[in-house]
Picture 1 (cartoon, helix red, strand yellow):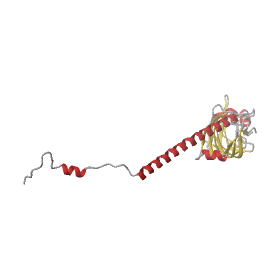
Picture 2 (cartoon, helix red, strand yellow; picture 1 turned 135 degrees about the horizontal axis):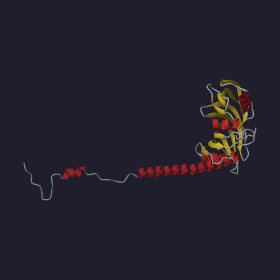
Picture 3 (cartoon, rainbow, N blue to C red; picture 1 turned 45 degrees about the vertical axis):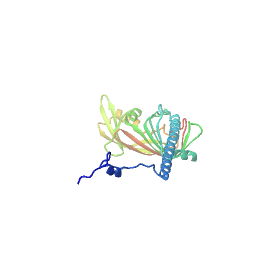
Picture 4 (cartoon, rainbow, N blue to C red; picture 1 turned 180 degrees about the horizontal axis):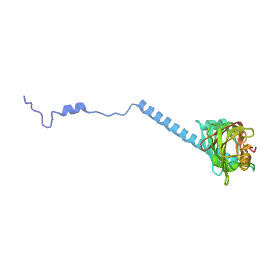
Amino acid sequence: MYQHQPDGAFVSESTYGDAAVHASPPPLWKRRRFIVAASLVAALVGAVVVDRTAAADAESRTAEAFQEGMGTSDQPSVHVSGFSVLTQLAQGSLRHVEITAHDIPARGTTRPLPVTKLTVGLDGLKTSGSAKEAHARSVQATAFLSYDDLSGVLGVRISQGDEPGRVDATADLPLAGDVTVSAAVSATSGNRIAFSDIRVTRGELIPPAKALLDTALSRPVPLQNIPEGLHLRSVTPTESGIDARFTGTSVTFRPSASSAA
């Protein structure tokens, strides 16, 4: 049955009114919790930024000390591990620092051998008031020595051998042809690389070739540009060079602080 509606009224008006949502501000405790959380996040971000700035400064000083001590043309890359660095600095030492340097020049006049790449891990690193000196409680390092540099020092062509722990040494003789010998490689005292158990693998070992190879391989090659306090533990021939592994305690980086065996 049709029901009369007053003028200006609509049948759907009451339905619309029932579905209306009235917004109200969040409770006070929710607003306070949001403000506290935002403040904590801001404080944490600020602490990270400040700590990263301190780490960058420590890395820069360490790189400068290493460059001064090793005489590299470019500063090495340095990474300080751990958070917070500010706390470590306040305690007087950095827990762990990684340094990677390239093209460390050879020192001395006796068969100087450059280091193509040196990777150093330092534990308990302390820096003095001068950026030119840094001291580490213990160190592990790997020096990569390219076959090209080793060949230049020895005067014969050095390459990876067919057996683990060995290298090939080739004497190039214009008239007699090439002569190749295989030699075992080992670490010896005084941070030196020694060659032993020499075997002819190709060609004829005529007197000129023998003299050339004896001169190259009979004497150990000293590593004269390694930080003072590091001791050679092992050498491993690889495809493109020799990895020389070092360890040490109480190692100091300063100008002229390198091995001079």
